Length: 355
Image 1 (cartoon, rainbow, N blue to C red):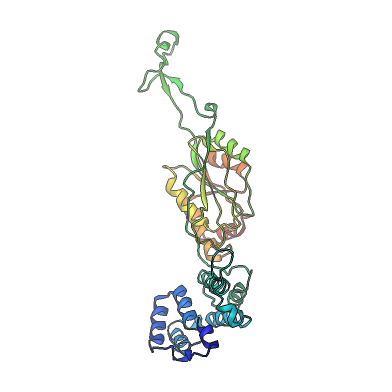
Image 2: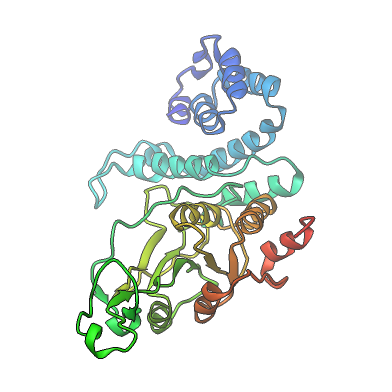
């Protein structure tokens, strides 16, 4: 809007009320990076722009460089358009004014992508931020995990064969007399029944682009450990519409007949591990099927996030395996085995003293 008014000859330098500098300092003191981006674009091209940047520099000096990079990208985008294109009110096939669709929506998308990015703090991260502003470019690192969003339920389930469950066994004592005839036919009078606890635990499966699962392997896992809770996860990089990034594949011997396909990224490694730990009963083990390559919500590797996952593995003795086929034996293992070949998480585990 500022660009359109300037080209039509309006004195947009008058669009300044004197509060921009103090407002920028307040937003910077709050650490509100997304609001800073939106406010900056709102005053772009007016006299308030200089005052706003001055206020940002007072509270957050490192924010000036990425804001200038955003400014250059926005001005470059509108410089290639004439007034008729920017202010075009003719409706497109979706019933949206063409000027709005070709300028405002594109600009809003750019701001949303930038607001999810980790604030650049060095030349390398600043270069990634600049590249992420270009059309079709990969998103810049966010430095944080995405919010865990569970799919409510899978559409269809079937129960594993009862042969997979531990059957009651006759015993000489108990609370229920299940086999009264054995009082006469069994020399030991094993008329009561005992049932071994069904092997359980929680299995967390990475279904990102670097990993894949075979439904037959999940079925074999449930046959071996019918009481196991099996969950898969994978996050779509940059997704903000709460698309599910985790789902239950098996629980209590009930399996899904079809599994959701994984998205491109990991994105929720630590949140899903914490969820799994909260669902493990007593001393039940947690097994993580992973290659150890932890990524943030935009699917970028991050050293701090890898260490966060490694600390969870160490503290709670989470058992690492690379394939679903090995998850059953990992559940039965008395002591967790961790190897150094689990990518970044494996290397972090080796760095942690005492592990």
